[in-house]
Image 1 (cartoon, rainbow, N blue to C red):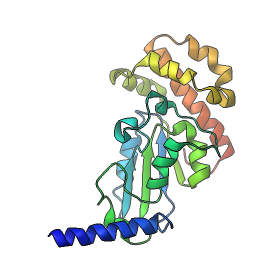
Image 2 (tube, rainbow, N blue to C red):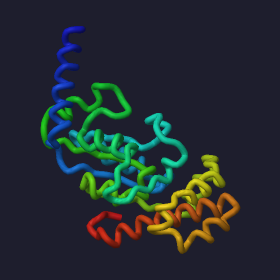
Image 3 (tube, one colour):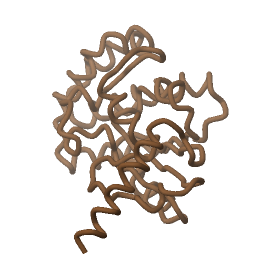
Length: 217
């Protein structure tokens, strides 16, 4: 048993080395959306496909142990360097282990034509950065703001901290949100704050979508 495990683990490391240099699977699928919008359900459903390798929220600080509240409002311009995003997506888009045991998806990665499926929410506003760097098939999930806001409130997401964190993203406002700054600053109640955040995130997505009409919404 020990010898068999050693052989399997050695094979895994050789496979990982190969995959780190060449992409032999199908074009990856990236599912993005605002938190509480149903991205997990869509991801789990697609992951039931044969030879799919599913990655759940590679940018989630609670899973990776990296990042902080700012991570949930991450905005990186296309072409910029970003260690947090690169460390997460460089691995998952090659089918390498992430957030699990070393054996994760071993047999699916061992042969070509596997399908990588990545589901994330923290990188929603960095959608163009991810697309330009990795060229995945993109599926953006949009849920009506009312149930999304209610879900955030029921989850007890800190409203004022979320608003203030969003307001500190200077490049995000410079590129997309400056005309709406006063509206976001004026939001006081949890309903107002989460509605403003929903609108801000989807404003960024709408701007990106106008430049990339091939994305699925």
